[in-house]
Image 1 (cartoon, each protein chain N blue to C red):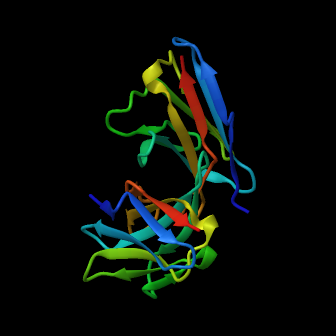
Image 2: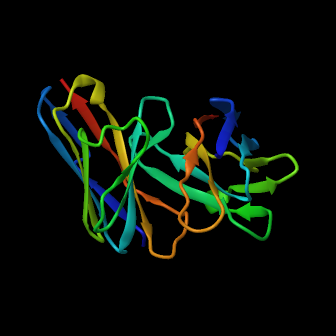
Length: 116
Length: 114
């Protein structure tokens, strides 16, 4: 149980284009989903927290107009990187928290984004 | 605010030897503490967590950790390393209570030498 999937697992795009990453909880309802960014050999940096049906809460320094998050259902959240640039290249990981699961998060396998 | 310090970005052990990964935390309130493992190009998998109760916590794959409030530590141990344990390990902390943000340490890469 508690499986989270991400799609795609990797993506390469040209500078200036937008990329959408999906995060799905496969066997539970995720009231809260988190989006992290991980640079090589570094820890996870929380980008934003999204609750189903409401606007995402972004961490300080994260551009909400650049990283659009939608959490339209209890099993799906999407992160759209708009007008991507090479500096946006990174490993993006989502996690999901079930109702009543308090602080335990279940992580997706991550998406490797490379912007040329 | 909470924070986590992982001592040693790289740790090497021989197969069969004791694994000890160090984690110290800072929290103004009673913390919840976690250890996660990450294999290359994968997400994080929860190894174990401490919330309340017994301070010695047992997790998956033979790992355990002990919450020591006096030392503000939550070190991860395994009596005998296996080749499959080679991965990146992250310690994390959050405030106690429901739905608190989790803060991750910088990670420790464990190498197991045959």
